[in-house]
Length: 332
Image 1 (tube, rainbow, N blue to C red):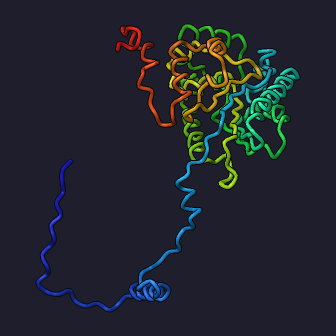
Image 2 (cartoon, helix red, strand yellow):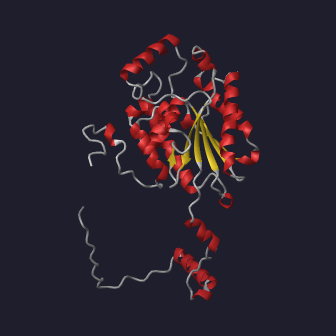
Image 3 (tube, rainbow, N blue to C red):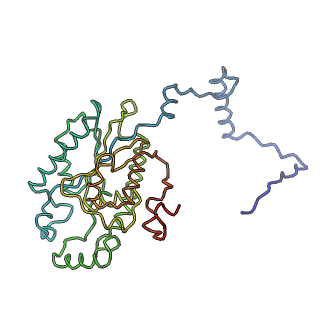
């Protein structure tokens, strides 16, 4: 980039002609006098009211991160019961079955049993896909909580299900899903719909929104912040798998080996010793292997248990999935 040198212009040989003071300059002088008058006790300089000590401290103390991020798949729906429901009902309007409502209510009780052991000041904050089956799941799940325990709720369109198209032709969808397995589950885009890669893009935007909310402590009022906040995300099977993939930087191959959560099931990202979220704090290794995590992914989850926010794992737990020529121990 070129460097630009500024040299002072020579003084003019003749002084500039004097001009009559304009109306604007009169206003400026008037403002200057007002400032001087109001600042007479400060040697004529403008003064500003100092912030209170409490306000200064609020900017230096980081808000507590939520204890958990709990991912919940919607309960059993009309589409799970009969795939032909999608041929006559728009996907966003598919409702829960009675079985699904019972699953959602039971999930709410399990969440409460898990978090009420933290103390008396625990609360929950909900993000939910705007689809009918996820909203109905939240309604049933929320029966486990009193109003004072619910800190807030957001309907988040970016958490919606993968778009498979509009009204779906049942036989055509079977063909499309067969082609998807040949093409690749992550990149295959349904006609008039989305691929998992498209879902990844919008989940990336949601993740940044969520991280900003965590960093700024937006889940609780400044004077009522505590360590026992829990964020619950109610969404769809593929969307939640993509969320985990994006959060933990899993590869496409690792994503494609994951299994779907059952209807009304949950997976828990819990804060570890250093402040990062790990699946191994709440879940056992056997549970995560059943979900589809590999050895490399589990090694990374062990690191997540003790690492601090902002730290980078330099011990290459995921490198072996790319650099297959390494010996054990990452070639050290």
